Length: 105
Picture 1: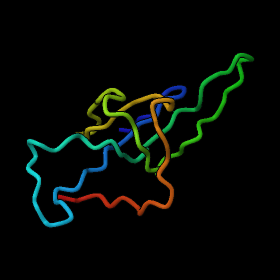
Picture 2: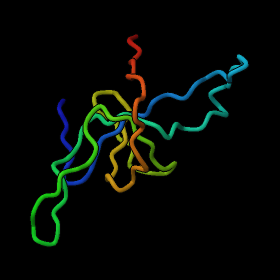
Picture 3: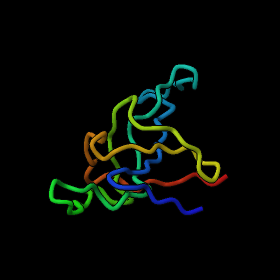
Picture 4: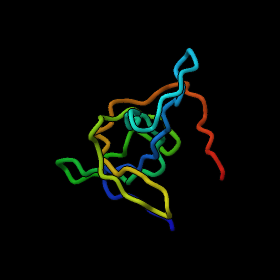
């Protein structure tokens, strides 16, 4: 299914946090926090300003971003857990981050 968010909303895929510390200690799932880093999957067309003109979003699909711990609404599309949030909920884009590699089962 193809999904396009409306207005100034973005669809974000969480990037899984590391399960090991730098010294090799494995962190169990029960104490891991939800990651606050993700990859933009899709973006809306933009919000309208006071004059009614559409203002395009700053982020684009493929950008790695940071967002607040409680930001967005969790949805499941095609069996994948995603977040939908407004662009204003994003804290910033991580520049020069390595490409996200998806695990294929």
